[in-house]
Length: 599
Image (tube, rainbow, N blue to C red; front, side, top):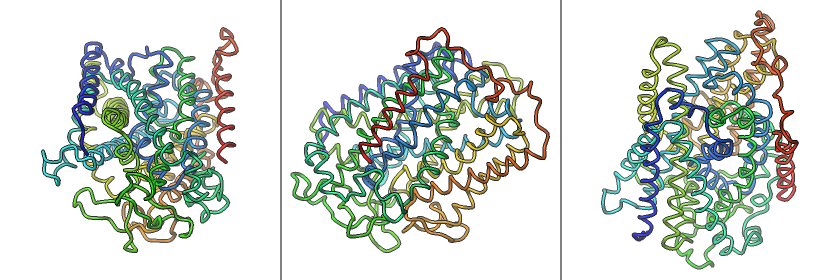
C-alpha cells in the first residue's frame, strides 16, 4: 500500500483534533460528576449520536463487515431484530428509572433496587466485560495497522502488532484522562460523522463495481442475500441458527440485555440535560442505527462478491468453500478479496481442524478500502476506521472507570474519600483499564470474526443480567436474595453451556468445550445465542424461586425503582409530535418496512 502525504495529513489532523478536545475540556473537569457524567448538561441530539457512536466501535464497523462477509445480509438481524426494538424499549420504559433515580451507574441502580451483594456481582462482571470489549477494539486497530503495513520498513514486521496495540492505547488514554466522559462524547459525535463520510463512498463505489445489489444476488447464494430465508432450520442458513434461537437468543436476550443494562450506552443517555431528553436519546439514535447495515454490512457482501473477472482482483481472489458454514458446499460463496487469516503473533497461516485455510473476515472492510479507494479518499476511509476504533475503546474505558470508582472502589475500598480523591481515582482507573485492555487484545487473536468474540462476552455477562433487570423492574416481589442467587446461577449456566459445546471446526479452549464436548453448533454465533438463552432462563427461574421463599422489601422503598410503583413521566406540556411515544411508533414503522423489503 502506498499512502501519499495527503492520506497521512488527514489521519494526522484527526489525531491532533481528538487530543485537542481532551486538552480543551480538561479545565472543566472540576468534580467527579463532571468527569464521569458530563455534569448532565448535554443536549439530546448530541447524546443520541454519542449513544450509537459508543456502540459504533471496531466491534460494529469491523465486526459487522466481517459478519456480512461470513454470514451475509442475515447479519442485518443484529440491527433490525437485535437493536432497534430494544432501543425503543429503553427510551420508553427504562430511562425514567435510570435518570429519575439519579443512579450514577447501572450497578448503583441494582444496589438501590436490590442490595449491595447484587451490585457487587454486576460491578465486577461488567468491569471485566468492558476490559475485554476495549481489548477487542484495540486488537482490531492493531490488526488493521499490521495488515496495511503502515510501519513497514520503519519497525520490524514481527513487532508491528505489538507497537500498534501500545499506540492505540496511548491515544485513547490521552483524551479520556484529560476530558473524561465529555471528551469521549464529543469525540464520538465527530467519529460518527467521520464514519459516515468515509464509508458512504465505499459502499457506492463498491456497488458500482460489482453490478449493484443485483450483481451481489447473482454472485452469492440466496442464503447470503435474503435475511429471513432458510431460518426454519439451523442447517439451511449461513448463521447456523433457526428462527427460535434468533428471536430468543438475539432478538430478546442479547439485544435487550445489551441495550437495557449495558452502562456503556446508558451512560450517554444519562448525560442528557433533562429526563425528556434522556428518553429521546435512544429513540433519536435508533433512526440512523437502522440504516447502518447499508454502511457496514454491505461492504462485507461486496468484498466476497468481487471475483476474478473484475478489474483489479488479481491473484488475491480465491474460490474455496466457506469453512465452518452451515450452508452446503455446493451453495458456498467465493471469498472474493478476503485474505487468509494469519496468526497475529507468529505470522503463519491459520488452518481449521480439517486442515482447510481460515479466512480473515475481520479484514473485509480494510481490503475494500485498499481495493477501491484512490489517494485522499483512502486517507479519509482509513481515518473513519481509526475513528471507530477510538470510539469503541473510549466508550468502554469511560464505562470502566465509572463503575470501578463508584461501584467498587468507593463501595468497598474507600467509602469516605473526598470528591477530588474520587476524581483522581477515576483517572487512575482510566490508566488501569487501558493496561488491562492491552492484555485482552491478545486474547482476541484466536477469533477470525471479532463479532463472534463480542457476542460471547455479552452472552456470559449481559444475558443473565437482563433477567435480573426484567424481574426487578416489573415484579415487585423480586428480592435481593433472589436477584443475587439468580445472577450467579445464570452466569454459571452460561459458563457451563459454553464449556460443554463447541462451534464447528473450532478447537476446544476459548471457543468452548473446555469442560467436555457434548454438542457441536454450526457456528460461533449459534453457540452464543443458545448460551444467552440458557443463561437468561436459568437466572429467571432461580430468581423467581428464591424470591418466593424470601421476604420482599416494603413497597414504600421501591417507589421510583419498580414500574408499577413509579409515577409515569409527565408529558402534558409536550405537543403530540414531541412525545417520545410518537417517535417510538415512527421508528418501529420504519423497522417493519425494512424487514419486509429484505425478507
